[in-house]
Amino acid sequence: MFRGSIVALITPMFEDGQINGDSLRRLVDFHVKSGTSAIVAAGTTGESATLGAEEHCALLRSAVEFAAGRIPVIAGTGANSTTEAITLTECAHRAGAQAALLVTPYYNKPTQEGLYLHFKAVAEAVEIPQILYNVPGRTACDLLPETTARLSQIPNIMGIKEATGDLDRLGRLQSLCAEGFNLLSGDDATACEFILQGGHGDISVTANVAPRLMQQMCAAALSGQHDEARAINARLDPLHRALFVQSSPIPVKWAVAEMRLSSRGIRLPLTWLTEDTQPTVRSAMQQAGVLSE
Image 1 (cartoon, one colour):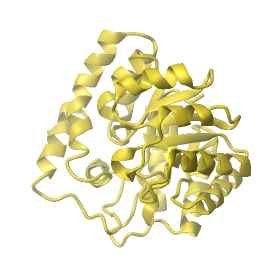
Image 2: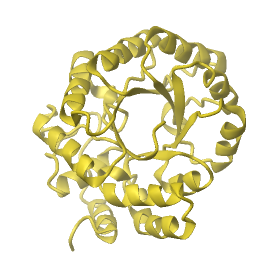
Image 3: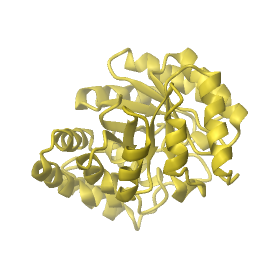
Image 4: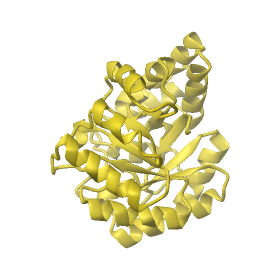
């Protein structure tokens, strides 16, 4: 089971869009030193939709190599093609990742039965532990708790990243899913309350920028320290919001570059953070104490 603050890691790139391996190594070291619980490599925040199959697999191999057993690596392997998702999940298994994270098939708008059969097919094809990822605001596809409960009975489907921000859904998942099913938030703004209400952790965009504070907040929430968790989260709340002033990962890539942890690069169709929104992100970073004034 994964617990605590898990970073949805950006994929560092040069201005021409090529992956910056040196920055990737630096980011992995940064998260090891900051106490981050695990890394999601090549997830949706890692611009997986713009990665070719070969470089996607190469990125996973690099992340596992740089982690060197110091921190678990969860590989983003979701796709809107079941065959492609199986291929990427096989790559993750061969690379030595500890688990795979599979976003719901986007654009296709499958039925709940289609979603069940899609994830079942991937799980049966590849033995690696797998985490479902539900983010209907980005995919136009909602994996309902009842379908998640069916999937939780499949031995190597171990959990879900639930990014609806709907805290009522957590209770339904807790009551319906198999015992020991890993319940992870995918919405930083509500993650503190999600964990205080019994969730196990947060796969976080904010953790790219403020990993130590995110880990402290998650640890306090997991131990039932409500006041401390909420106090830390209050410092992070402007950052939770600022990192979505434009489509993610646009703001977070700019923020990580401002911290001198990555080069300034992003792939089309995404573009660099516009100048008019940069002060909002900078102010939130300063409030969280990750950037000097």
